[in-house]
Image (cartoon, rainbow, N blue to C red; front, side, top):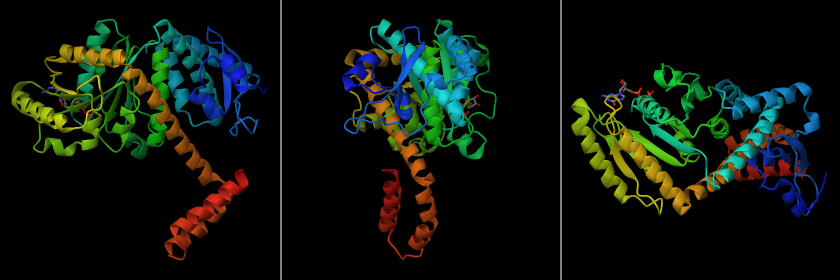
Length: 402
Ligand SMILES: Nc1nc2c(ncn2[C@@H]2O[C@H](COP(=O)(O)OP(=O)(O)OP(=O)(O)O)[C@@H](O)[C@H]2O)c(=O)[nH]1
């Protein structure tokens, strides 16, 4: 089905979403989130559908698939934890058909969430907070205390984890022990460990999609936790409204273990374990970080990053910390920075998906695969330059794809 760009926009009444773009097709939903039809994405000037990947048409769904998706969607928007868990499992799947079904579900949840945001005066319905810090910083203890406080105030809290170690080793820096025991029993909380397979890029994608699902299921506070390893902190900072760095007070070269770049990303630094013998070192670390932050380039016009102290053991500072988080959120909403941040995150997310998928398509392309071993060998032997080899491979790729 073809139509003009203006007709297309009228039909969709909302900008094409990432998942729709990814499949090269567009689904249309009515207000209650039911799928009506789907159309190809208009591409001027070639006037052909952009889709190269198999796109899913409503007619392609079997009755069983429709029933499964309806059940998941209905359960999700009613806030059932089992439906949320199942939906996240669906977006984490590597199975090609299930991946397509996951996109159908996500598109539906996206439409639902947009309705909610419209009803909320075009403001985000949930607060996304990223929490990072080195192993043993006290992240899970802190999330447990903060989470319990929030559910006590009638918030619904979800906790998602991004653990790059679990992708590469199958073991986990975060998940090997029982964490957040009380919060995991709380009916107003939902805790999801990191996927244990895939690349960081893959985990980032599924976490972004899991955030959307949590919001669709009515969780108004979404906490995304990660360890200070590799690039995971940067990935998490790119998917949340507020990025929080947790620092333990012990150790000699406290500032050294933490990457400078990550301090620059922090909207809030929390010095943990502010109790007992650690009170004095915690104060000292707070002063060090306060000075360090003053030297950094200002990231936001509406917010100056702060350094606070908490104790998850005594609860000291946790209420104040939540007030600081809320102050950050309202400053961002009033200035529009929060909405801008979310919009640019969508773009970053899209480009990281493009990078990941484009590279995969390139590597899997038959011409590239057949030429690659010889060219790699000749490059290693120094017979041809890497630049020439790359040009030849790209030529092999484009000459058969265009
Ligand atoms: N004194 C004190 N100890 C704490 C506090 N919070 C956490 N701890 C201790 O610090 C250690 C690590 O705490 P966790 O909450 O597991 O830290 P984490 O950052 O989640 O650690 P990983 O799961 O390894 O990433 C545990 O032995 C906790 O008992 C606190 O507020 N005060």
